[in-house]
Image (cartoon, rainbow, N blue to C red; front, side):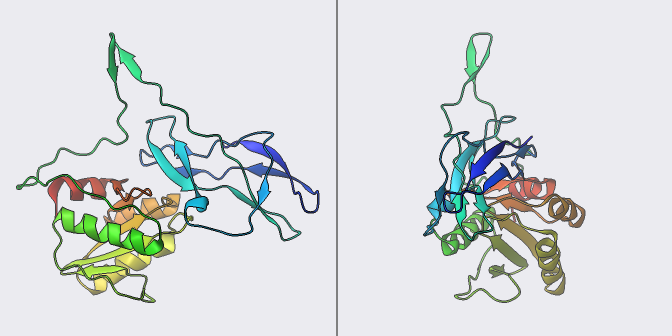
Length: 241
């Protein structure tokens, strides 16, 4: 369950009760940033890419990722940044005296005919970096001749290649159902496979629809390392393009 904390706007002194938004972890568990109680809030006067994200660890699988920075919009017009508890050093799991790490994701066994080298990610600092990271990952999976347009088209398709269309959602909002269905329609019209990448995860209905349509969903953190979050994505990583 998400944390709820009282928040007072420093501008108008109005009291609010704030609940942290809940997003799905890559393992599927619901996860909300742990709010720091009694910490003073601060108005947001300018934004940077890194300030829009906080580091959160999943209590179910131990995965550590970047999540949207909690914010509260006061009716007076002030937008407040809600403090989050810093991530502490992970506690290892001990089994018969041996220290073992909890896996962040359990993929299908890799059955690609030609073993791939380790993927080399690129750090994401801008939305453009997110698209570049997705393009590199698709090439690593085996897709060829991927085109990245200079200006994002109205269709939302960020990457194209022979038999491929891909979309990248670099905002702090989870990808929604409409985005997933539009990507699928673009793939259908192009007789191409569809792949979706998102920095903030996926809404529940979007993820369910992607499973029904067989669309691979990947989530990325700011290190630029995509991780599969549904069965079709697991299969794509396992088999390759």
